[in-house]
Length: 212
Image (spheres, rainbow, N blue to C red):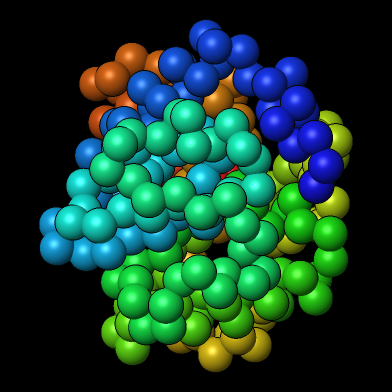
């Protein structure tokens, strides 16, 4: 997408980025890190401003994005590829222990491109590698889903399940409701409350009327 850097500069102020990074630090430490062995090689696809990959602990960390602003927001220990995720030819086959995707597939121009990205992710994962994905769920937020200019593809947890099965993944777990739709929603802002929220999954179904 042309001028993607300008779009996100408009959408996220410096204050917004600081607030998001604070939340992501807790999300990584209190939830996502349990999926990642310290010896893993981890790739963040559509890394944005690096909120996930900066805060996760792994032996080797990689990020890919088409936004040139991504690189200057990444820690020095992260290898960055300014590249289209539908053709990750710079990344070796069977080289990653875990691939992470957050808030990405809804931005792609077509489902055929989503298919290509999933095929590439399957290719670069090791035979027992993990694919961890977090996405806005149109089933629970059908109106605000379209408040973002670059949201193109409507996706629910069920449609994405079909997509990953089509790409020869095995689905281990689906959480239809996990986080509120945006950082301005009902997710608690204090560190302890975010930690407590993540430890009590029953809250996700009562406090989240939209979902990832």
